Length: 417
Image (cartoon, rainbow, N blue to C red; front, side, top):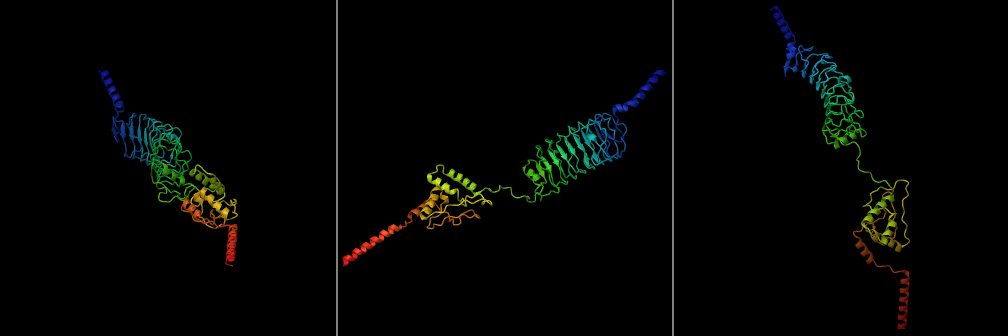
């Protein structure tokens, strides 16, 4: 009988020792749910972990307490998915966190550096929030945090955009820092990034090609930065990128200021006059596909004269370039022939007819003949005007007419006698 009582007492003692852990009794200072695997110990002024926490926890909230150091104290929770240690007095991310974590919230602490070992083995981590700390440097190892989608480093003291951010990341919040530069290649791999928050920083410009690889970007914030809107050497890239991107830009730089650089319209051709006349020849050839012999004669003259003002698209000759000259006509007939060739070859270049025989001269300042008269309204009218102009008799004709007149007068005088 005594033996049975002893065995019963031993069994009861074993049950009293092991049942609380096995059944998952919730610590008195916390609230539990989900078979005591979701534990909320926030706002309890705790400085050490409460007794009675199960090893198989999946959610643990330790926020709004007075923890200063949690190194090596959370390693045993190998099933932990979400850990909230925000609003404490922690000086660093706790060392040796369980590798099962999906979400880590460490906002509003005294963390100054995000060390590479803090995240080196967190292959399953999807959310990392270290905002509202005093982080001056965030060291990330290349090809780690392969599951990370959300990174929040806002409201810290960063000067440079962190490098080696995971290539699968979708949202990065770097607002409210002291960021002033983006090192080359920092954002090149982030082809899945959809949201980038850079407002309230110290950016004066964005380096060339820094945003070119952000093909999936949907939202970017750039307001409240001291942009160098007057520096046309460094600011143009971000202004051009903002105009061309399909992403929604909140706070476009220099939106209320005019662009600081000159107009980007193509400059005028600075080639010599002969090049411009050849271009005019090609336009004339397109307008008249079957040139006549007179047209060819016109081209010989056209290569040596300036194009009309209405079609001129080039400046004057550059200094030191000889100006082509026109041969001076020898008399009225040659001058008239020259005008007739211009009329038949290209009506737009024909001057109004007149008795002046002064040859055309070229002005280097304007690129036009100095005595080039007003353009005729129509070639037909000008030709008719030339046809109606009476021809001037030659000296021989006048001499023969005079002799005939004298002979008639002499015959009349003899008849009267």
